[in-house]
Amino acid sequence: MSEEMIKRIKDRIAYHADEKKFRFEIGKGVIDYLARDILADLKTLGGIFPPVTIGGKVYIIRRRKVKEGTVQYIGIGDCIYFNALFGDISKNFFMLQLTEKDIGRIVFLTPEDAERSLEE
Image (cartoon, rainbow, N blue to C red; front, side, top):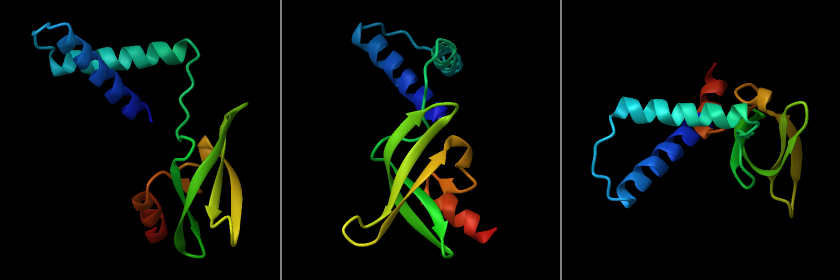
């Protein structure tokens, strides 16, 4: 998630630099460091960046198959946790409460990561 935020910050910086008609080139390394510094500052100031978004997709392994779920709720306590709905709500479904620590072990952010986990 942090890499995605860094990209958004870099895009925003580039957009505003162009918008003001500043036609100077910002070296790639400079803008990378600037975006990372801004993200670090936001985190230091208490910014919270959940690894998932409401309505976003997550994936688990169930019965040796990858199952897609939708994030329904994000909460913040001792850690960031989220509820994901799996299956069809009109038929058979189940909901799991997961934490950011479960990512990469129980739940995956891409179907490819879940598939790789099946192969291991």
